[in-house]
Structures are given as structure tokens and as C-alpha cells.
Length: 534
Image 1 (cartoon, helix red, strand yellow):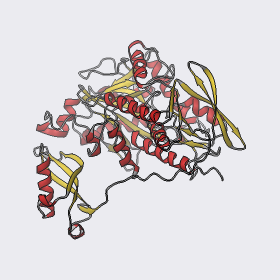
Image 2 (tube, rainbow, N blue to C red):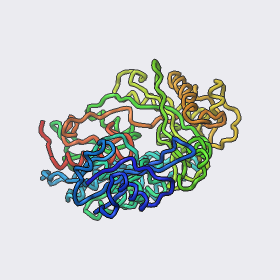
Image 3 (cartoon, rainbow, N blue to C red):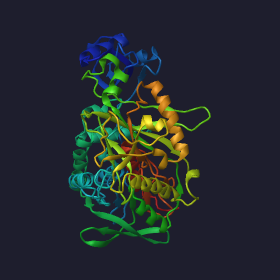
Image 4 (spheres, rainbow, N blue to C red):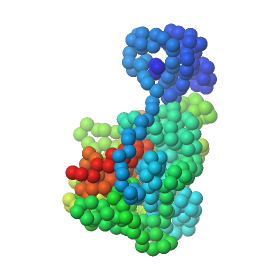
């Protein structure tokens, strides 16, 4: 099979036109193709008066594939094989069911893999099922009544359920393709298999995770909501069982020799318990910053020029970075076209922001995080959990500045660049459902961070006209981009307590839906291998 890249066609070209263009590039006839599949689609908007679509396609010919590939640079045409995931053999013979703590992307995919091999995992999720969780979140946004167990961070699907459902990832792992295939099979839109910037949307992601849960149960697994991991029973450095708090039935114990920790980046109380139980951990760098909102129309015009309102292009996005020669860099993260900034608190008396958008991405505003890297040197001391204290300090300050009722503090770009607090908003209407209050970002974020954001705003404005729009609104803080701690694991994916497998974003081994799902698969494979000896 041949992978043909850089197939450029006009905006709106039909599949047959792409097929014909591919044949023309190869110097063959389209009728010679035994098969033709589009595997990647992207937009080339560098020339605003001539925007085009760029595709990659896999084609099969009955002969001449090697000879054809030899005629082109490898990055243009190359031989490739059809992807097929091969599950490793299952050597686990224990009579005990594996337990998974957490039902975000890592826990879902780990549980699905274990269930498919007949291991009947018990999955404990501290939050609620996606439908109940959605009601919990809306109650918080409408009435400021925070459920600390079921919120934007905790519950079925993990933090990603209330996001853009973005599936971009920087990891290079063959399992990524399998994650996409699984998501599509459980109801995600087909274009995630070929889009250069795939997303599901928060409105469709809930149904996808629900279908994954139903499949795990059908295969013999069990998913229990409202159940928070509270204890580990350890003997001779081996896990013997776990304790959890069931919100309906109280304290429960389960005997097990296998615990997969898919707890997410906000389960601070759980990580603190694990530290007290002797699991080895270390500080980890992460990022903090703010959410910035612009009119989506501004972003469309900056990216697409005269095509800004062309429905075939959809809402424009961006990904920007600024790396000064002798300074700290800033970058945009988790850009949500046509989206909403949300209050994503999970602990009382703290405010944290995030962004989300629905599949249609048809909201009035675009938003993204502007983040700055934070090294452990920023933390107060060398304790492994000092990063949590750093995050909490920012979030408490934000809560206080917002008025103590989960209103989020904000500042316009114009006021921020003038180094003055915001007292009046401009033309950009903030979307945060708990409301915003004009304030000064410098009262929350460290000076090094705000200085970097200042430089980044000006640099981004040179790259994307209008980014430093004076009326653009920055709502802060964005402090949960990833975990500030890593639970150490060895080459067998286990901690110093044998049979315990730290997994996903909360353990410090992933950064997004796809990478967390991949890590869930890798940990399931480690459970299959059942290597518990030193």
C-alpha cells in the first residue's frame, strides 16, 4: 500500500476529485486503484486569497507500488501497511479482579482492554455517571452549589468530558490509531479518523463514554459511581486490597492484587493518601496561565481572510507559541473555537478556569489558554506534593478576588497591557457561566508568569492579527493543565508497591484525552503480563 501526502485540491473538492488528483500525482489511472482511503485532511490558509485543502491518502495497486514509491521523496510517497493492533498474550492467572480507580480516558480504555480479555475489572469513579454529572455541573454553574465529588473534574469521562473533546496529541505511539478507531466505533464522528485537528465536542463526548461503559459491563466488568478510593492495604510491599467510600453505602473493602490508578490531575486528596501509604512520588513541571476570549469572527477573518464566513471551513482555530532567545516562553493550549470559558472548580473556596466547545463550534467567542511553564523551583520546598500547594494558592486568591461565590476574576487585554485593573468590560462578552468580575491578573499569577504573558500577547498579535485586541477578556487562573506530581513507576508500569499501576494524566504520564487513553492501554498490557517480582 502507498501513503500519498500533500494532495492539494480546491476548497470543497469532492472525493472523486481527490482520487483523480492522487492518480495524477502518481502518474497512474484512478481506475487502477484497488482501494483508496483518505487518511488525513487539513486546511492550507497561508494564501488568504487561495485557501485549499490538503489530503493524505492510502492507495493499493496490484503492482508497481515499490517502483512508484522509489520515484518520490519519502515524505511525499511511501510504502505503508494497514494498521492492526495485536493484543499481547494474557499471562495473568490471579483469581482476584483488577481494580481501576477513575473512569476518565485512561480508566475507560484500561477497563475496556481488561474486560475484553475476560478479567472483569471493578472500576471505581468518585463522580457520577455522565447524565447525573451534567446536572451536577449545571447546578454549580447556575446556583454556585459545588459538588466536590461530581463536577467538571470528576465523573464519568474525566475532565475531558467538559472540554472540546480535542483529540490532538504529540505522542508517537501506534496505539493512537486504535484509540481513534475505538472512539469512532462507540459513536464519535467519522472525521476524527482523518481530520488534522480532530475533536468530538462536549455534547457528543458524553454519549461516547456512556457506550464504552455499557460495553465494559456487557463483557463482565463493573463500574461503580460515587465511590472514592480512600485506602490501600499493603503487606510486604505488595497490594493486598483497597478501601473506598461509597456515597450510598459507606466504607467498603475489596481484596485485590492489582490496582490501576487512573485518578486524574485533580484528585489531590487521593494523591495525598497514596503518598501517606508510601508510594514514591516526585515533583513535576506543569503550566499555569489564563483563558483568553476573542470574537470567533475575528479569528476567522485573521485565519481565512475573505473566506472567513465560508461554512465549508468551519470555525477557525490557532496554535501559537513564543520562545524568546533569553526569556521564558508562552504558548496557547486547548483552543476551543466557538466555545465557552467555564469555572472548573473541584475544591471549595477555589476558582479554576477551563474551556469547552460543542461539536458544532458555533458559539460567538473563541477561547484558549495562554500558558507558561512552571518548574518545581517555583514550589515552596522540595516536598513531592508542593505543586498542589502552589496551585491551591492561586485558586484561593482567584476565589477571593471574584467575590467568594465562584465568580471568576477577569481582565481585559488592554487593561493588562497598561498594568491597570479592569473596572469595565468592552465589546467582548465573557461566556463563563458563573460570571466574571473585573480584576488584576497580577494579583493571582506570579510576576514571571504575567511578564511572559505580556510578551506572548504582543508576539501572538504579530502572528495572528487582532490577538492583542484591547477588549479581549482574560479569565483566570488556568491552573490544571496537567498534574504537578508524578507517581513513579518502573519498566513494568508498577510503583514500589507491587501490583499498583499509576496511569494517565493524574499520575504524570499523559496530557490529554488521547495520550491518557493510550497510557490506559499500556497499563492494561502490563497487567496482562503480570510481572510482580523485582
